Image 1 (cartoon, rainbow, N blue to C red):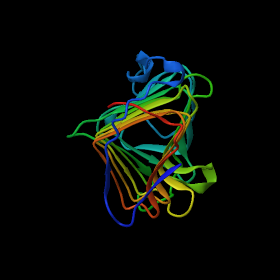
Image 2: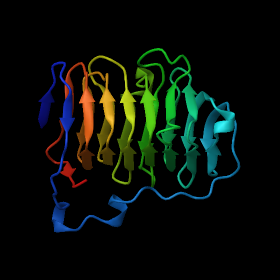
Image 3: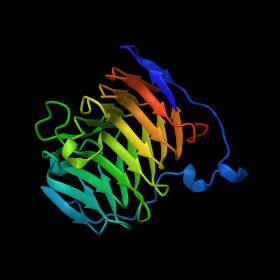
Image 4: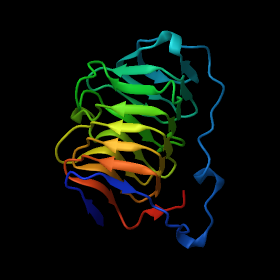
Length: 242
């Protein structure tokens, strides 16, 4: 395993290794394309909790969108977040994605995921992408995710991704101020596929970024001010070109 030790310094990582997947096969189109999405229903106003089984959209007109319980995006459903939306979650609440989460903001209208209090680390559970059933995909652009990592929800991270079916693309975003202490992360990924570009990961606990297996593209991004390590990437992880 490779540990990149950080002692109060900003670490800029540009990973540009190109390794073919095991067996010498080519990277599939799925590895390079954002998750597909179905046409969402009309705007759904908060408060939100429970399972989304039909694709829906959270719109700016209804912002801020309050989570009063964990929201589960079911396999086959897409949750779309409009530019400029603020999502505020209760203690121990989060968004668990078995389907697709599409949150694409803009420079003028970024999207914010935070706690209801919006005052410090560990106040909500964060975003969880789980491809155990099928999808578990995410597309996050011009998004800020902060103050996640409530320990009640297991993995303490702002963003986490699991299983080989999962692909999460993060661009022009900020992952900030996750729970502090041991075994806490800005982004935690196991067996999933991450594409991260032009993104700041800062104020994390033990690791800014933890990647085990799966694949990783990390380009033009900054990992700063973690309590322990900037990043940990297992040697079995496939590193791909940006």
